[in-house]
Length: 371
Image 1 (cartoon, rainbow, N blue to C red):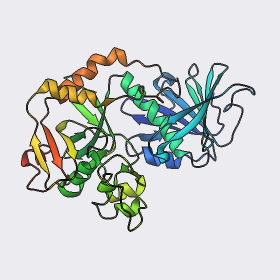
Image 2: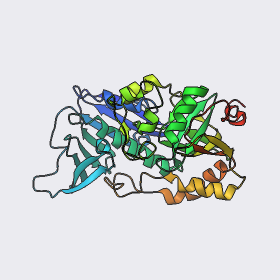
Image 3: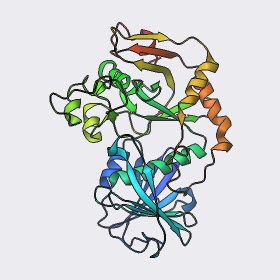
Image 4: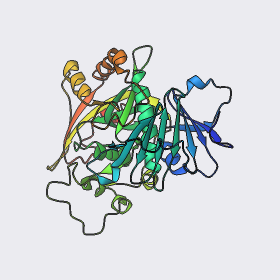
């Protein structure tokens, strides 16, 4: 039975993962849905669908009730939903457990979540300025469910063109965002993913890539290259980065995602496409940008890709809730096959400042997405 009388019923889907949303009158989650809508599809709930098909039902209230807090006197523990080098992305919280439910309150915004695994429900109250709290919950649930089903999540940006994707993967600060925007700005690509790319093995052994919604977080060296980006990021005239930080992950800026999407075109929502090429950037100061093919060494390339596979189940703050059990072990072979298949895709090493031109961007890469 719905806890929200007169609630608007919607389903939110990504690949085969589905969340049902019951949004009470007066509860506004438009900002969160707009952010997620680049990659997750929202549609009126199908009343004929079996309840077990949904990973969870999020019951989103307009006002606080006793469903959102544990009984008085229940002890709380402090934790983080997300902890980042950037204060903007850090979400401190506190958690309590009582009566078979897990309660969480985001301490900056007052957003509250109450998890009931047995009932497959999560009661939600979004506090002022708490849209990103709800986004973080939904992204966490979907990614964990995807991983439990065998998807591999690669720390990579993805550029889309003509039915295939170029992945740009590497450590933080390697230049993934810069190369992504170079492809979009100069070679007619669209942004498919800006931080994570979800990879699925198909029945025939092939691999398809799907983008993922993320908040643009860009270094000054990237922002300064493209007209209008510094203004979107709110950088004042005359700003100078600390020495050595223009091409580093230190001092990055959060960029308004709506204005960013207006500035750079996005790939079609739900696109699931083969990977035509992989670029491994290591950009930094230099006289020229060099893009050269990686030697054919599938084992070494697979190991490099494995090192960039990440998981929502890992990390110091990954256990901020326990709604889902970690089932990745049952899918380890599938993830290994995914990275092994990607290791056979043409790969390129990029060094230098990262300025792509017709001269240094090989035709074999440029045409790979058209072949």
